[in-house]
Structure formats: structure tokens, C-alpha cells
Length: 212
Image (cartoon, rainbow, N blue to C red; front, top):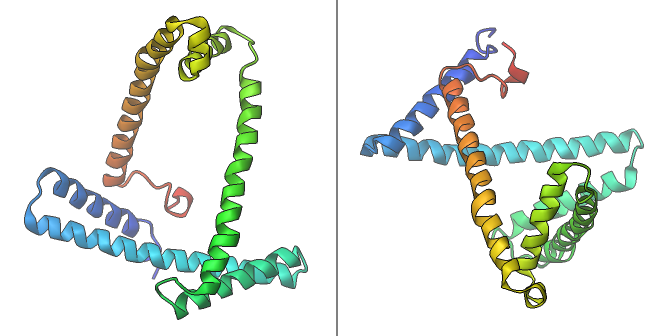
């Protein structure tokens, strides 16, 4: 049993699966493609089980909160909504149950939209803080942003002239594009490095905090 608790088993499984996926990508042999497809289908199934385990853990956590008399209204509401969604979803697997649709359309969707609406207030405040000129770098950002705003707002182009749009296009197509390509290349190199570390069994961060 102590052997089964070692991290070498999941590391080995991850390495083998990574190699299979890479070989399927670069070789495309039919039997290898079938094996790769089967692994991906099992991954979706395991992800579903993981979602179920997470839901159970969330429910049990709310039960403990109620037992400790901490945030009782919120925890009770979470448990009730989880049970109602689960039962109505099981009763009608096509997800057309009126109770399920009512909760989804009038509670979940509205809260989700409200959350995104609040994001804009934080964004505006973040822009306000970012646009304070403190050094040459913040000045360059403000300078470039002004011309990009001029480019995207037709009223400024009619006031300033076509030069505003020309400068804005140049800023987007030259410095901005160069920075995006540099970030993409750096991220790709980092992804390749993580892949090599996973294949070699050196990447242990996803297993019990990286321990043995």
C-alpha cells in the first residue's frame, strides 16, 4: 500500500499519456489516434466525476457551516439550491424542467450578468489609477492609449483629423503586435518546458503540493 501512495505512479501515468498525445499529434497513426481519442473520452468522464466530488465537498462544507452556526442563511440557501437543481435536473435530463429553467434564467443568469456589470466599475477605477503619470513608462502608456481612443471614436477623428487614426493604427499594428508576439513566443516556450518536465517526471507541482 505504501507503494501506491508514492508520487511515481501518477507521474508515470502523466508521462505516458503526454507521450501518446505527442505521438498522435506528429505521427497520426490510426491505432495511436484511436488510443488518443479513447484517453480523451475517459478524461471527460473523469472530469465529470471530479465535478461530482467537488459538489459533494461543497455541500458537506455548507452542512458544517450550519452545524457551527456560521453564515447559516447563506449556507442553507446554497444547499437548498443545489438539491433543487440536482433533483429537477435528474427528473428531466433534457433540462427543460420549469423549476430548473426558472432558477437558471432568473437567478443564475441574472447574478452572472450582474457580476460582469460590477467588473466595469473596477475596470474604470483601475484605469483611473493606471493613467496617473508617474514615470516615463506610464506616460508612454497614456500617450499610446489616447491615440488608440482617438482611432476608435469617430468624433475625435472628425475633430483632430485622419492623423489620429493613422497613429492609432500604427501603435496597434507595430509596437502592440510586437509585444503580443513576444508574449506568445515566451508562453509557448514555457509550455514546451512544462511539457518536457512532465514527460521526464520532474513536474510535481500538481501532486500533493509537489511532494514525494
